Image (cartoon, rainbow, N blue to C red; front, top):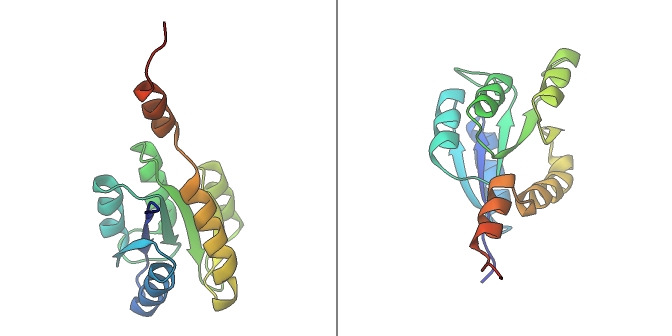
Length: 142
């Protein structure tokens, strides 16, 4: 059986959460949701996700703040920003790039195919810790 990748979707809009959850579940992903920034950060701290889709504007803590805190805490989940029309600005984009955001997509039905492709790509990448664990599990040859 193929490994199922787990993703987290963080957004304050229940319709968005439901749409993304159904979309990715139908494509074989395990999907968890968070309705605000604090809940999203807590889930990132305590669960292992391949990718997190984080809305830029969400209740209790914006997406940039979540990403900054996740990076400070060395959470290795790859993060994709989701922005609504008019969300964000040039500064947000610069900050996102500087803190290592994997991608940025506008929330729109027309991007779902590209978003799926990016999430699959990011889910398949191994982190440095995963590479180290894999290498250390190999039998040593003398």
